[in-house]
Image 1: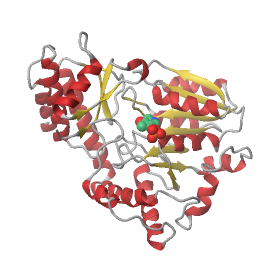
Image 2: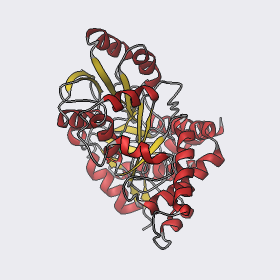
Image 3: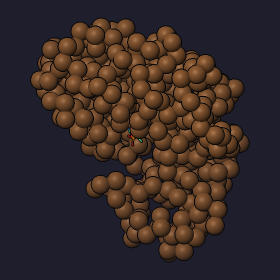
Image 4: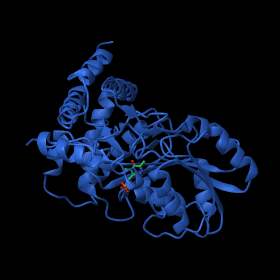
Length: 377
Ligand SMILES: *Cc1c(COP(=O)(O)O)cnc(C)c1O
């Protein structure tokens, strides 16, 4: 059986990046390693669309989220949390752990947080130090209107901190133009890498807050330590240097394609996938779908978790189940990163076959045909 990974992280990795990871491990304080880190930081600026430095952390994405909280907020300081899914809840967990005074703006899973609600919350809470939001809410497939949030937050003292871990590289995200102060991403989603690195961009406005925060409760994630090393293309602690060299290659691929082309390709693939799902008689879960993944509502009478197990066992396609309360209720199909239309066509075809076998009424090829029609249009 050929394994085919369609989970919204980790995602498949191109062969040349995998081959880089097969090379012998090298020492990390060398000119060669510094050159690799420099290239990665420069290419990340391009992907983030920022002029500010992008800090490379050896951690999963959550480490970057933790840095965006522990460096910014002193205990008891006020933060607004926008949440409509499990990753919004991850922000909540981190914010609670660091003793933030939380103002919660919450919407049901599957919907997006209306920018108007943020506007009202900020007006009521002028002492807010930072707002925490999610670009691509991977648990529901929703994409949030970060551009609108940016316009609202920019007029205040507060910082806008965004989890773009699964969004960056799959959907339009313009860090500087949208006035995102701290943007957090990770290696294992649309950036075509295994897990292990987190990326954090920091605006001048955010550095002022970070540098005046005398109560930073972090050592490893103290961003000031990383900033001090950037000019030398170095890191304060041993970095995952083999991963950095591998990320260099996947970023080159993005550079070669061009960021606008990358965004357009993901948009097209997401649009075609949504058309396919609808043509199969299935429903989409996200009210404001993003381009990183498609989230499908499990139809009545079908065992959601059993279907995913059958898909993997019979055809090798690994999709993701819903998390927590949504387990068995939704299927999550990723089309971000190292993934092309023919990969997705295969997954749709396998899903059709699996559904047919479990008695779901469906015209064989309906989804595949709808996908191809969109692609050809
Ligand atoms: C995958 C993902 C994370 C993951 O964090 P890890 O620490 O890398 O597991 C966070 N936020 C979003 C939106 C994600 O999709």
